[in-house]
Image (cartoon, rainbow, N blue to C red; front, top):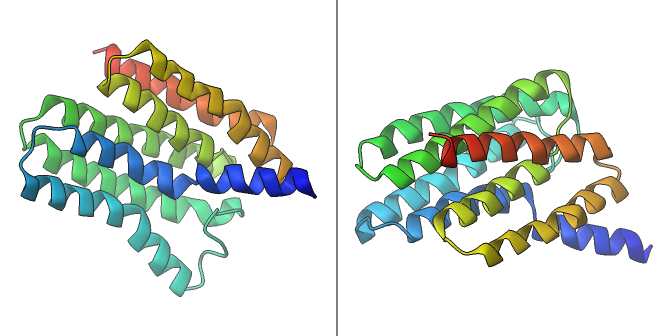
Length: 188
């Protein structure tokens, strides 16, 4: 019982919604954009994951905020991908290369995960926590930030203990996101 409680706490702290929102918000806060643009872009990136979820929940198409049922994921994930893609096009007009690169990465990771979700359930917790960790490392040049990845096995463990994912689903969520992020941030 204690093991499941600890797993639930870890899972909630590294919730997919939270890590999905934190990635662009940290990037925006660290950017040189003026306050109005930071606020507007921040609001957009907060609303992107929340509004489609609330709409799908109201329509009865989603049973829980963790999207435990794989068949409920594609509509939400592809909606995110489209909205992240449109946001990337907008961010690209702001003239900030770092924000554009991060926005592109968010869009690409979301899109790849969406296509995988058509056939298989991959861990959103692992996907978006990895995206957050790699993005912070990209933004802040400090070797100490690699320590963020010490959380990764605990997040994976929590998802497995709670019966939400298998080891393979958590590992691939991490590895695919890590690969795409390294390619986008340091490969181009």
